[in-house]
Image (tube, rainbow, N blue to C red; front, side):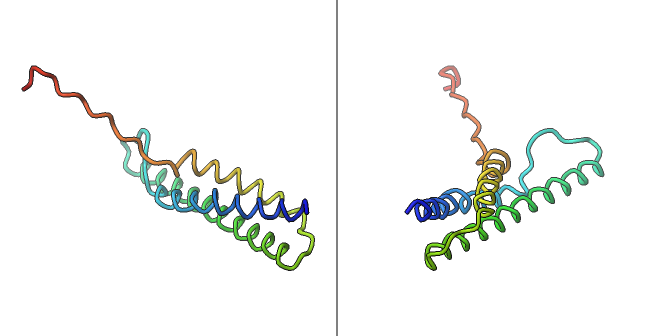
Length: 121
């Protein structure tokens, strides 16, 4: 009973956290924020490095999520014991999901609109 509950929680964690993080992260891969260099070549090189690292992170999240989903669902359906390494993959997946959501997967904040002054009317 305990292992089935753990497997169901893993499936729910991947579906509720990792899948939205993949969608939000894919939208934010090319988004740039922060300060930029005045040197065009340095700016281009930093952008290429940033996009590469973000893409590799999303690929790793996708692969870990797939392994956890296949293993957990397979263990529930076949009623076999799930390998202990899948739990490690699940924790690593959650950590990478937190990294994605806290960095390039978050939505841009809207800038606050200035109030119109009564004198301008």
